Length: 416
Image (cartoon, rainbow, N blue to C red; front, side, top):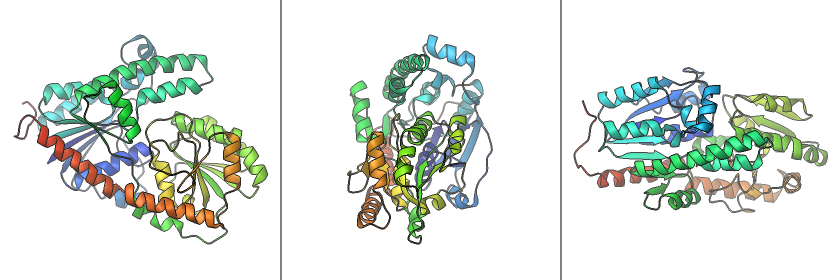
């Protein structure tokens, strides 16, 4: 089976949850097929740390194609995004040189199936339908983007940003309906998202392929001497607005009260490209902002808890699964744990308000039976349900079923 995988990002280096999902789905596909991965990249190069190089080597026989895209939204794009029919988040990923490259790859190769990552690639999915009309097309939804914008509009303090987000959410919802009708099949991260999308297009073929975790990679994390864990850790790409909001919320509304009750704790914000307002948090007592780190495992080894104080998001959080695999208790908002098959009080702790989060975190001590039971239950959950090998088997079944349903039994190639 020959697979073309199109993404809004190049899957290496792994600096975000989205990179993780792309990389591990690509690795699962590469194990059973001939894979061409075409990813957009703002930087075109980046460091490959030694701790992660071994995972990149899992794709040795795949063709990895990197295409440059613009660095961010320009003023003209912002105006077009609110006045025109196409939301700015799609405009930002749309460029002639990207279209040219995708067309060239399609004409030079013959693919049994094409997967693309989300609504942001809608313009290219339309063109794929023209060039390779009979090739099965599958869309993988990391998030429901219209939902993210709608939730952002509900929480932003800026009237102008709320207005722009509401308009963007409307345009994205329209684009999402087009994607749902354009692709032959869809994969989403949770049953909740499946139901949300089916409300838009009931006839869409949608399967849950959850986010996962490399349990073996994080297995050694939990071995640490008693008494050394004193860090509260938040992990994420720190240029992503949902993570920025979460970090600011925790640092300003929660951390002062928690530190007063637990002066032994330190708060670490761990993630790439921290925004200026996140960097400034390091001026508060007890807070460290690390920036990009090569390997998360040392931070998990010293963590007494991982917090996921997410208030704006869609999809499911890989940071929750990683912490569970690393043997660290997770305190999350309901939204932060949304879509995951977790049981509050058994394998995760749920708290939403600042007072609830402070009380929950202050009571969590490493030297208690409750702490060890929580981490053991969480590890069993991710090993059984969320290891990437388990998820890869589910994805393979989706591909097999999709190929069986295609109108032409012969391998379909691109037009010459």
